[in-house]
Length: 151
Image (tube, rainbow, N blue to C red; front, side, top):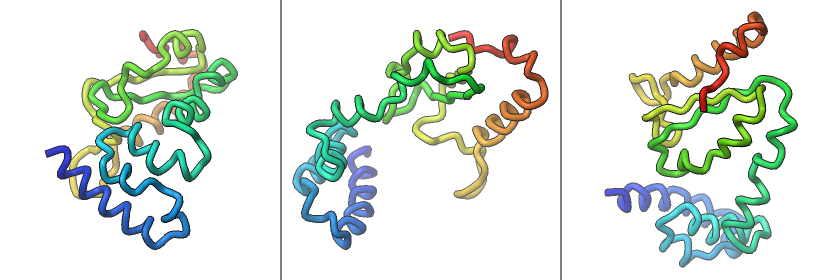
């Protein structure tokens, strides 16, 4: 079933690429054969942005080296069942070491799958959660330590 879903997404993405000036820069065969995000990155993003590999792309764009500089409250939301960005990739020690970072690790949610029901385009519960977090940060700064993540 997953391959059928990814093929539909690939066809949709390919339509835009075919019409773009970038068509000749991507690895079209690699695009169609990709079954992982790393393979898709290698076929499309790496050639478009000058990276030699998916690992190089990820290292250059990882926020991990800058987490220690965060001084304003930040909320990180991650689902344990995310099939694209595994919860195991969270830099737990770095997140724990910065008291300005708050983590909400949920059992479910998938990848961007935090919908609150209803029709497509309905609000997600993460929007409400982010708004509540922002309000607490603005009005109850002294309570932030009590809300600190238990990672």
